[in-house]
Length: 128
Image 1: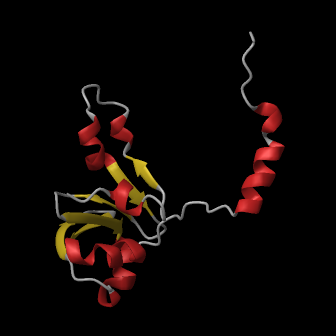
Image 2 (image 1 turned 120 degrees about the vertical axis):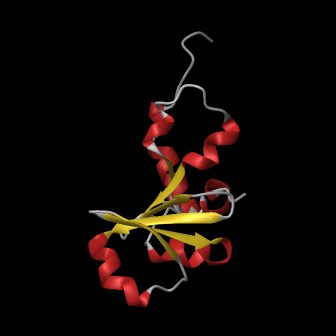
């Protein structure tokens, strides 16, 4: 099974679907089914264990329909969005196509400056 958070979490922002907060009987092993990667051209999530679903607005799909860098199968054509399915071997190309939001990468110098600046806001126990 593909775990988006484990495989792509260091490079891209992997968020949880909004329904994760609503459902009450969720387990830790169900989390990969709620992971999604948001991008400027669309978003993607797991369809099943080896297939990734990529959704994008119709205007984006129409603009890039003949230039898609990955093979896909068309599943749904909606009023506003298109849903494409991508096999496991082409997931990297599909994720890079949607232009996902990157995680912020701090250098060691930036980390030290940030920790110095935020030191006064760190938690301190009231009783010592």
